[in-house]
Length: 164
Image (tube, rainbow, N blue to C red; front, side, top):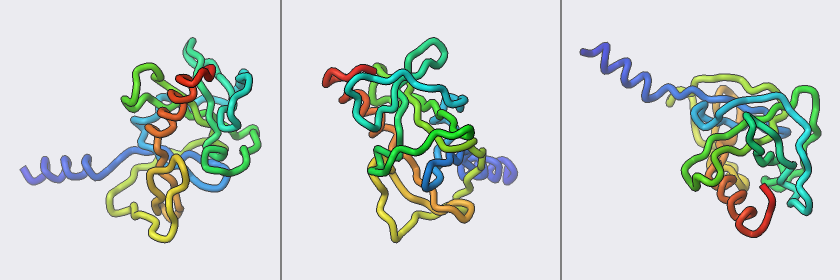
């Protein structure tokens, strides 16, 4: 019985995540929030789109909005390189009208398992827009994205006549 309790505790405290390289930091996201990581593809521009909307990409026969998290955070749009990838995020339940959206990353994501003992909140930095939290993991400062806020931004953009 102790072994079963230990295994259940281990599972509850061990979260598989992806560390997604961004221009100035790492973004940490649970693997369940990401549908797929794909190679960068040049998006189709959207007429009169805000700077944070890079364009639309095709993924599994669907058109997805591609976001620049850097621009959402108030930074310059990151340069696209040969290492750039696209993280396709799953819907969080805000609305079934947007099942997926995508974010540009600046490198190949790394799989990691986050243990409760290995993560701590960054106390001296406030989260930037579209970040839920800043944490220390594996010696790095990482941001945990506010996926629901990104989803809501896209839904509001569409509701106000934007094409996505």
